[in-house]
Image (cartoon, rainbow, N blue to C red; front, side, top):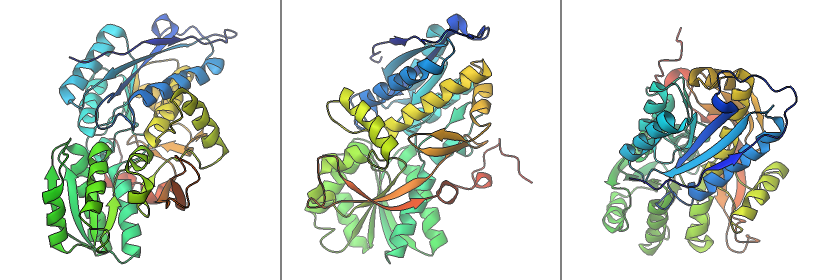
Length: 404
């Protein structure tokens, strides 16, 4: 059904003052990294997410008070039914207490339901659908890095400021793409701009010719890519081949990451604007952590999703230690008690809807002449406060949010 990857056990080193851990079997917390190992999101998450989770367990060890951590990993193959089966087996047979990563929003939404029913935690750190903290919110789910609302609102604002007020969408036809297009369209309407049409294509599409011709024919000033990973990479490359950017059409990447830009290359991607929550070269903390990660990943640099796996896992482990329980609702409540000072994402607040709120950044892709190395890809254009970029707490329809 799926390939189950190596289990790594990392024991804590500090035994002094060790609690009883009566509610934690064998004094061990088990975290499963449920990811895409070989598919379109493998570079964004995949093996790099597993490395990030292991690093979180290692960094937690000196402060664990005797609590041990075990990291498991599996490939969900971008199929919700496989993701659900793995998550259920992990909890029921392997004693897994939390699942992290979850690229592919369709898989994430399905797995969130499993973890809710079993009162364990879903750390949807790489899941983008805003429904996760909207009508599908759960008291056992935290969405850490970004979401479709934040991506859409920030990109629309940047394009509107540049006078690009008509859009055409190329959308991957599953939960992520639908949410990206829907949330961006909401922001467009609010700004007084207009969507002229869209083409929806299945995940794994390699030929974007007909969609690009439709976008060209619409006369839109913006070609919005409501996709990610290999799909977005192919779309950007083919848009260049079709001459869209040379004709003045602006490319708006609603969800692209460092690994995607590196795969496209600066000659084709330079000038592209995109919003992310993390960049390896932001500050001393991000550079130091990224160097450690890079040494285990053959010189690559981490994406925001891989950084999110690390930070969400570490915050979860600390909450388990402090609450002395693995009951999902109680652990998530402990995570949200006070702001988290995270070395990769800055000050992070977990809201009642499960949204982790932190600053985001508007980046512009450098030209080849500006870049000083293979991973020196971004110029920081703007820091966007979390309160300004994420959907207002009372606007998502989350049943956990008390309304006046």
